[in-house]
Structure formats: structure tokens, C-alpha cells
Length: 499
Picture 1 (tube, rainbow, N blue to C red):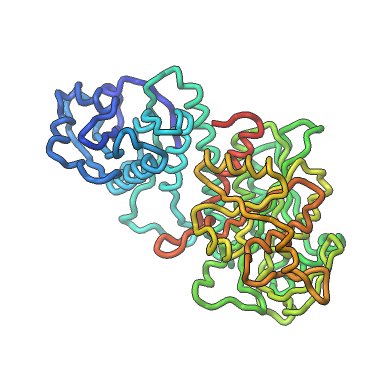
Picture 2: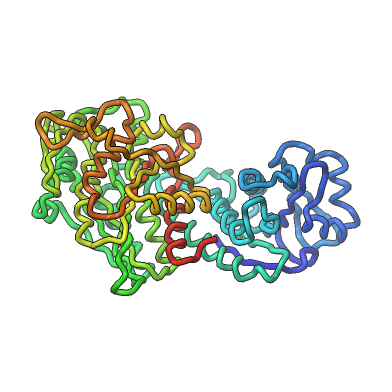
């Protein structure tokens, strides 16, 4: 997608479609008032007919309006002016993109970016508009031919601002928004690919391809022999049931000084999870190709980071494997030894994500990290507890938890902090190993995080359970690209380029 900032005379701009906001009770936005005056009250006349008296998001396309150079005008109801917030703004934008797609318009100029809803400035309006536009324009086509009547994806969305003094932050918002959108699109594409294409090796190849976008990014991949030599018994126990070899993908981005400690992002890369011997029910098992959304989120964030060109040192780590039932697969009751030397009794082979993560989390100690954030589609319990709106957040550091929470609010990729109390640790007790890999039904997302916490005592750490946020189910089934916006905002905040 392409975009630029303009504060030009709206009556003179030549565009296939000029997007204008109106409010409840037939009020025109300032941009719409300008067009109304130039067209001898044409917009006021339309509003008087009541065509836009409906709910927020109702829209109307107008053609042949005199006094303006735009080919079409798209009016969208933004609700009550005083109640315009991020949610109403998003609703209006989504209605706009639906109308543009239906009319097969691939180039438009949006003036909604000048509305500045409650709690949003010019930077946030522009960036959020572009992210939503890119999300709407995404089409999965790698294994499916697009329908002949498929809505046209939006290719260019230029953004209008009323105050030319806001050009610099608005242009920065364009650069940030398009960069983050690239990362989100990559994360979605990797997650949407079927497991027979997106194998651990394929995931490693795609991470390597990202390095072509920046001389600051280097990628290395550890194979099973290297992991065995290190002693990654937990991770390798998961891949034994698969014919696809496990990969440990390491993405080193060096944008900071040699003295700067790295931020480490770790993402679960289960490219397909059948549950192993504790096999999952057949219903919706196809969605288990999404069990690598954490790994895709890491790769997508590194892609965005390359485009943002931030002065940070960041390391992306993706332990990648499949989890399938085979004669060599883990069995309930098996005991494995992790890289940390701690033993784990595998009571449920479907709790495999924590097994590959724990070895990766131990491995990253060698980088002497400033902080570590892991992300994983780890537990259905998190969906039960929080639904599909926020990701679950667990952390051993209050400042890190607060920074992630704030980044989530700014990026509209929200998190909700969950407890990580020692009270839950006893649920992982085992009679035969240092710990069990599950802690029972009660607080399943919490005990999973408690399991990981046993491997993260050497550094500042946060865990994101993205099981409810990384993909959509039902008719709109597909990956969302979260938490790339959250992590990108967090990295921007680290260098003071926040909104």
C-alpha cells in the first residue's frame, strides 16, 4: 500500500474518491463543509433527505457533484461528534473500506484523519487509518485463485490533514504505519499457509528472506544436531513425532551500539499441532496450522523493524517444530531433560508449546538480554478467561508489564495482565520429575506461564498468551497479525518515538 500526507485545497484535488465524515443530527465535518460550500450546498441537501440518519458507519457514495475536482464523494456517518472515539473511528473507517472495495476503487483521499477523535492525535489517526486499510486490503492468494468478482484491494490511501503544521508527525505516522503493516501482512501470510507448505524449514527460509530488507539483520538457524549437542531435550522431544526436522531460528538485528543489551523476542513456532499422542478432536483441527502465530509474530515484527530502521539491538528467536502422533512421539508419563537441566514429566503431549519455549528461553540467557518477551498461542484457557479481545500478559517485572500495557492501548493491540503468583506453582508438582508440563484445569493459562517462569529467572521477562487474538474463527477464519502492532509500538516507545 502507498500513502502520502496532504493539506491541499479539497475542492481542487483530483482523486477517484474523496472520503468525508459527517456526524449525527446531519452535521458536516469541517472538510465536508468546505465541499458543501463549493458545491452550493449539495451535501447539506443530501443530508436533509435523511440518507445518512442511520447508525455510525452508514455510508453514501455521491457522483457528479459540481464545484469539486474529485470523481466521487463518499460520505460516512461518524456518530455523535462529542462521542467520537477510537472505536467509532474504526467503525467508520471499516465502512469506508467496504464501500471502496464494493465500488472497486483502489485509490482514495481520506479526510477522516483530520477528525482527531477523543484520545487520538493526528499521528495516531493517520497511522491507525493506514493499518486498518492495509488489514482490509490483505488478500490470501498463495494457494487460492481470487474470485473474478472479488473486491479490489485498496492500493493507495492518501491522508488529508487540516493543519499543515502537523505535517511532520503525520508523515512519520505514514512511515510507521506502512512499516508495521508490512510486518502484520507477513505474519498473517505465514500463519495462513497450510502446514504442508509452512514447515519449520519453510519458516526458517522466510526468516532468512526478511534479512534481505536490511543490512542490519542477520539470520542463523540451528538444526537438530546442533540443538542436541546443546542439550535441548524438551524442544527435540516434540519434533520426534514428525518427519519434519525442528529448527531454532535466530534473527539478529543490530541497529544500536555494541554496548546496548538486546531486546529478545521469542515466538512459539508450532507449524502444525495435532496434539501428539494426546491427540486433539477432529473438529477445527485445521486451525492448528495457526499454532505458529507467535513465531510469525516475531518474524513479522523483525520485518517491521527493518522498515522502521530503529536504533535498537533486537534478537528474534523462533523454536519451530511440528507435534504429531508417531511411534517416536512423546507419550504421557515420559520424562525429558530441558536445556536448563530441569526435568519435565509430560502428562499431556498437547502441552507442547511450553516444551519448545522453555529451551529457547534458557538459550537466550547467553545474549545477556535487556529484557525478553515471548509470545505463543499457548492455552485455550486464556480464551476462556479473556475472550478474544486482549492478549494475556504475564510478567516478572511491573515496569515491563506497564510498558506493554501502554503500548497495547496506543496500538489498539491490547493486553490484560494476569497473576503470576507462587500460589499456582504447586499445581506443577510431579512425583517423578522436577515439574509436570500441565497444572490441571484450574487457571490453565496461569500455570502455563508459571511453567515458563521457571526458565526466565535470569532476566526481565514477559509472556504474551495470544491464543485468543492471533486468529479469527468462523466465517472470517484467518490470522490477524497480532501482536506485531503491540511489539512495534513497544519498540518505538523504547527510543522515544511514541505517539
